[in-house]
Length: 192
Image (cartoon, rainbow, N blue to C red; front, top):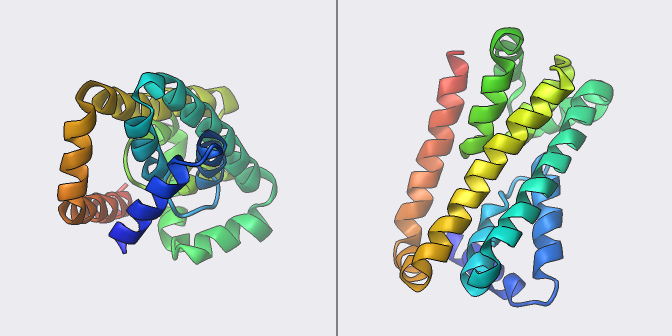
């Protein structure tokens, strides 16, 4: 499955619409879409290494704007759309426990979730539900998403072809590591 997703991403980034597709995926992933933008970011930077930081900037800005949309869902549409998204991810129970920590650690929660494979959409919606200060949310999101996407872009810019070979050769193991980190993040949230 990961190989098919990777091959699809490679085909997408070879299209003249690759950057707009990345922008859309980055936006919707921050509020409801299950596939992280990294799936497109990585091959796009590998193919267009000279534009690596421009691509990371577009990905960061669209992700934060999508996060603001997720915040809006939590703030205004929680009873309808927000609950639907949380139910879709079987995250209502964790979400209820998680919101209790928001008042004390909101900025750090947003920041850490923005760096990790934890579904960022849950954090954006939670931020809206608990009415986390909007400037705190935006600043934490900009730093976290920026660090994440610019670090990926820098790695791929610096190491280029060897990194592509490494990713393609180890896609199975990298997928396992990603899912272990994802499950670990969910497990960690249970104890917050």
